[in-house]
Length: 180
Image (tube, rainbow, N blue to C red; front, top):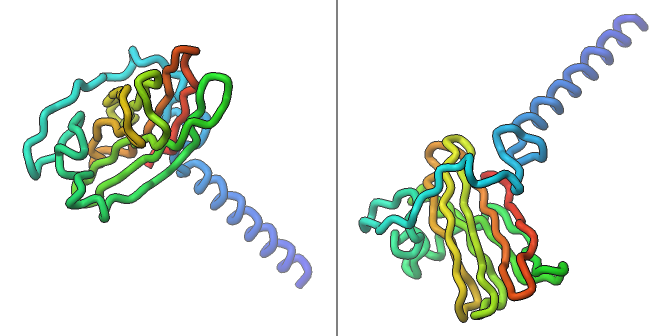
């Protein structure tokens, strides 16, 4: 009877360890994940898309989410935030927040930066889809409480957003959301 209980505890322990390992392997955006490159990875290995003019009702990679009617005022109530991280200025002071935004009906995501934008602060946002190594870069330097990047469809894999702020003092650190 004691041996049987010992074997049962051993089997349960193995099952718990294996389940934990499987969950860790499936966790999106974990550090060291070969499917999700480092934020510091060069852009030469990514296929960068130029902004594409939208066709109403047909969102596609590289489109402005507002013009593509995925993030427009008419549907903004249905847009969800999948992840959010702090954006910093050179020297480490907080600038604002980078959000990974998603519109389920468009099956598309994009980056949005909230912070005190101005002529002397250019916000750079890049959306990346690791499955096919596609990126959608954008930048904004003007007066606005927010800026957004171009969208990527999520039908062929997760996407993540990167952002940094360029100022006369230099570039702030690149930050990245999880891949969702």
